[in-house]
Image 1 (cartoon, rainbow, N blue to C red):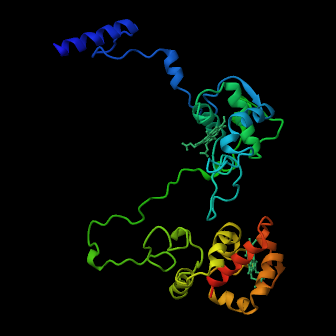
Image 2 (cartoon, protein in one colour):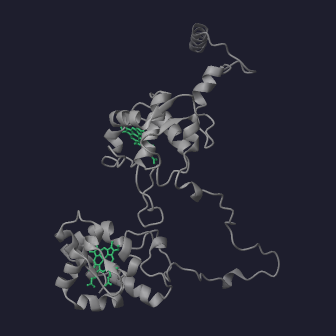
Length: 327
Ligand code: HEC
Ligand code: HEC
């Protein structure tokens, strides 16, 4: 009885809504062109899908400030932990890549598509075509990709070249390097692992305590395992002083660009022999050199590593960390 009742409710509901069941099973309905257009909103890299309309950087600035800046920051720098939309050029191959629209995205069309489809986060698909053209132009402007008089429309938007486009390519390297063996193959019990990262068999994704992915660790590019082991010991096993613990964060922010890999002649963190004579000069000299900068025999150490927002104490703490990690 109950079953029949439910069935008749469905029939009545279908009849009231006016939807005509279609297809061999008699369910669903044929999508109208309007319905399809509502879903078919993707924009291709060649501009196909971009609607008519236009918008300027100037109009975009006002709209962006009203609808986007509360999360993404006035200049695309990102409020709090909301995504950063601008900047980050040249960071992709560093230890701290910053992927933004400008530094990472291969095609401007994705920006149009993304904003139209998904933003503002709290009201997706609430923007008109004109608004999206304006705001997208402004986000490109924040990334120094277009000039402030840029007006975006189907034509001009399609012509925008993103700085990182060429780094997206089909990688046709074989993912397995060895050929298959069918006859006279080696005895598997004789195999042993011969390749390691920097001479150390990786034990996990991160090198212990360094905060650096093991395969990106540049502390010692040579595979000389003896010195690698010694460096690892000095970086990870020494108990750091309070100053050094505070300094580690400063170092990661302002000093590692040069001192992790030895760029421009900088002594590498953890390279005991590279630091022993420097440490011998005494902490006062090291602190003075780090705070005020100096020209040495190996290169130029810029004052505060070029980051003048750091306090003297920040730099002194970073030096303490570098010295303790390099003894
Ligand atoms: C309430 C906060 C909020 C507001 C307002 C907002 N967004 Fe977002 N936005 C987000 C979040 C969260 C993400 C990440 C979403 C995800 O990864 O799934 C994001 C992602 C993005 C991205 C992709 C970033 C990337 O590199 O992956 C773009 C571009 C973007 N937003 C543009 C805009 C624009 C333009 C506006 C204004 C029209 C806007 N957003 C308003 C929260 C917001
Ligand atoms: C742009 C690259 C660069 C950055 C960033 C940088 N350094 Fe240096 N640093 C150098 C170079 C190059 C030297 C070696 C100069 C020489 O002795 O010839 C050096 C040397 C030093 C020395 C040794 C000084 C001496 O007298 O032997 C200390 C200490 C030092 N840096 C601390 C820091 C601190 C702290 C930071 C971050 C706040 C930092 N560095 C950021 C390039 C850099």
